Length: 210
Image 1 (tube, rainbow, N blue to C red):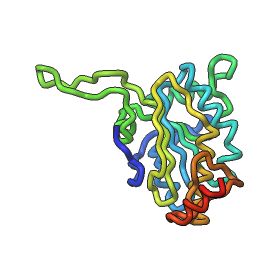
Image 2: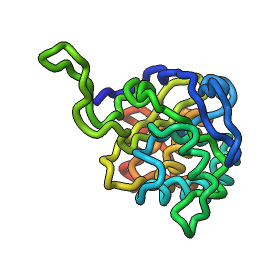
Image 3: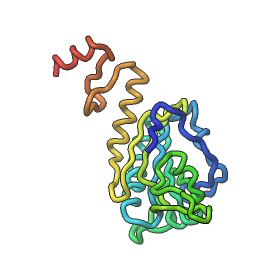
Image 4: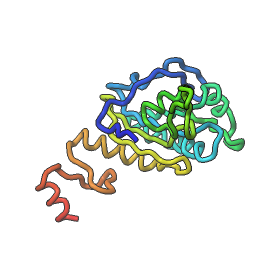
């Protein structure tokens, strides 16, 4: 598994569905560079079980992300038509109607490969033909990308393990606090907690007071 933290986020152009039902061609994260932080997350498949709980949980917290000037973007290996159908299916029927943030179609699986979250890999058989081994879906990867397009945080869960949207918000808060104040955020830091100066003296002071 690649570690992308500290590196430029891989850019792409792909089909997406935005605003709950509008098709967009050549959607790119590049539109946010210099303007917004981005939470870019992968999920395995549309019309599954854990995935809608995460996708809807992100939507429920969209006001919190927006007031922090953070764009939320989801991505799976489904087609744009599958995304559209799921977005137009009622929650009571297993759908995600009401979700407004973009869902990217990685039907070629190249985005998942570039972010190294594809649950499997290509290899060649005895005849020299490419074969895919494993599940051709994305793990539950999440990447926090800053305004310069650099990945500052990543977490990858296996397929059965849903993520904490509250933790994603906490990490956004920690990064934005550091960017504004220059102080680093210790374990379990949340807004309102004391941060510390990144020096031996700063650490000693913090530990002596806690």
